[in-house]
Length: 506
Image (cartoon, rainbow, N blue to C red):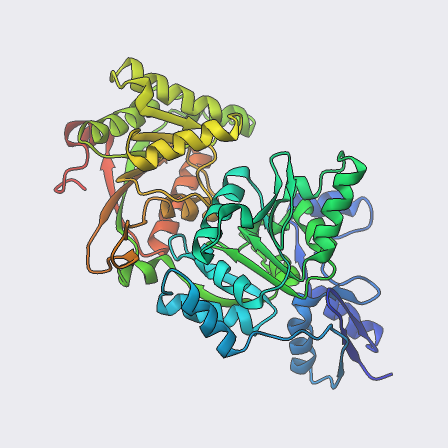
């Protein structure tokens, strides 16, 4: 039997390979879950790896190109049987007509991303924060002009997308349906929270409504697609069986970091590729800064020497002791925020743990006499209307300090200063957070940002020194900023207290 790749809309199949070659192919389409996973798996005869091809040869469509290329590289002749549903793609004339009708003119790189999202039925759009990802998404879905489901992971992002896509398409907001926040109102274009789409406790009528919406979607978009590694996302994506077009959007389209026994990072993005396909286009933060679409940041790393007694507690307790409840560190955070507030600047602070933000907010009120109404703090525990009110007040300038545990992704701001209050080691989080402070204001006449107008922002972070875990995390964040092309400067706490990062020090 001649080796054959059979292509279908979601699942494909590899047949006709001898056992030895097939095992090698399966190993090629796998990734190692890390040392501890391998130890646990060994008890059951496993090796700690996740295989993206089943023992029967089934795999997701996004990996079809990888399978084909592997066979070509091995010199294995094979056939490709294409049983996918045929779909009429938008013509260049269709796309031009859509772009002509949009109230905003696409930037050159946006036009390129839109074209690629219309030519290809599968893929990832890697667009840095501030690239106008939602505009690109709106233009692509309007060009395909088919029943569309957009998967998101938060209420804030769901409502923001509903508003922005409607604005870009020139529709009323309620033209876009939503499923989430206890609302089940799908339309031809629907934005659905993954939690609501996978809610097993729904009544029969709502379950049917959700199922019909998922099965009726011919176009599937996933915003913040790096979350697609999660089981709820993967099950939702698989549930949209009739979606011929599958596109993922993110500023950081990578999956989680996986470490081997030596601590080496073994990051694998095979999961995203399996569900959505390869990267179709990439626009980086540095590209946007150099073209004048984003502000130029200076990252100020505050040297913070930690007390470490040589005894490492479990991570949660160690984080509390070293980061969230360190009095000196929190006083430095509050003094930075207060200084820029007193200068008339707006400041956004990124927090991981709710209690940590509460500590900083109390310091701002008690030690620096900043009125409580000038300090917004948004967390997942707040109802969506209160969160929205704080965010709106900050955007409009009536509140000049905003901190939150839910600000890292998706939401748009125009602050003068940002500060990473909580630390952390994840590349994605570091990139997403600093990306929130780099936007420039849209010029009402140009209907876009003024690329000739220079805007610079300050972004503070900590170089936590003296602790094996948190020093390592700090160095990873610093490396991320440098890799993104940002200027990074160090300052001691003493210098900061004296001059708060004046030019000669920073």
